Length: 132
Image (cartoon, rainbow, N blue to C red):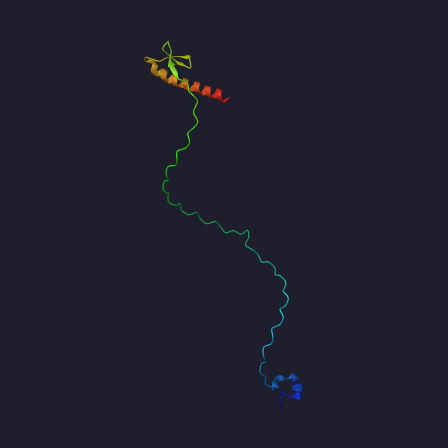
């Protein structure tokens, strides 16, 4: 049976097994590019998900001692203090006021400590008055 004549092709149209396949043809030209498809859904993100915090590492070694810094500016002068003096009666006088404490003899040792406290107290009072 001949497969390439018109009658055989019409008869064997539904039964191609009787004819051997032909040779492949040449590759055709590329077709036109199709329209773009719809944008797909956005997938889940890892936003807001944080892993566990790792363990703290061991402290590092102590660094070397730094060099000495520059000298800072001079401070403001302090308030002039009261200077005790020995009065004509032998007692300590502070700002012209008799403390009633002797400036000499055995009682002087105790007098110096008391006088020191009096001077400190007087200086505190002076500073408070100046602050007002």
